[in-house]
Each structure stands twice: as structure tokens, then as C-alpha cells.
Length: 143
Image (cartoon, rainbow, N blue to C red):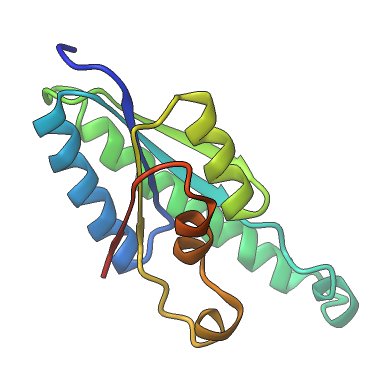
């Protein structure tokens, strides 16, 4: 690639994260830098096994994670012939922690995420709010 640096984008299969991915791809193309898409497979709540004695809820969550990861891998594979170096990093854990870790590792120039649609995030703070407050990178939040 002719440029330097990297742009990190958080993707989770939601509409806003996919729009963030498309925005990040265009930005990486213009800046001639690497695009690192990060998909964090959030760990199921510790309370699920208590209420889900059959394990079906946990199985459903894992299958959903698998489906999203498969879709993201297909989208990244379609970019192989493009002029942007795109890679997918899959992590397990808490999204904020994992995004920050990847951004540090790749020495990100910017972090891009989709806007959260959850009502609770307006009260407790969303991923994007935490990233902005960390003040480590320019953060773009795509609606």
C-alpha cells in the first residue's frame, strides 16, 4: 500500500456497524491505509446458565456469533481484489477493551464505530462514548 497507518472499525453485524464499515472502507481507500475490522464476540451473561438449564439460549447465542462472523469473513474476502488492505480480527470479550487493544496494536490513526441503538446506552454510556472519552484516537460515530 502507498499509505501508512491503519483505521480500526468495530463491526457486529448491525446496520449501523455495517454502515460504519462502509464509511471506514472509503476512508481507508482515500487515505491509502490498512483497514482493520474488529468483531468482538461478547461473552454471554453469567446469568444465562442459571435461567437456561437446557443450554439452548447459549447455543443460540453462539450460533448467532458464528453467523455474523461468517458474513463478515465473506465481506472481507470480497475486498481481496480491491485497492484497500482489509483484515478481520475476531476477539472474545468486552467490546471496548478489545477495540482499544487492537487499536493500540495496529497503531490506529482513527477508530470508527456505528451508533448504538440501545436505550440503556443513553444512560450507562455507549461504546462510542467510552472511545471518545478515552481521547486516544479520533473517533467517528456513524448513525
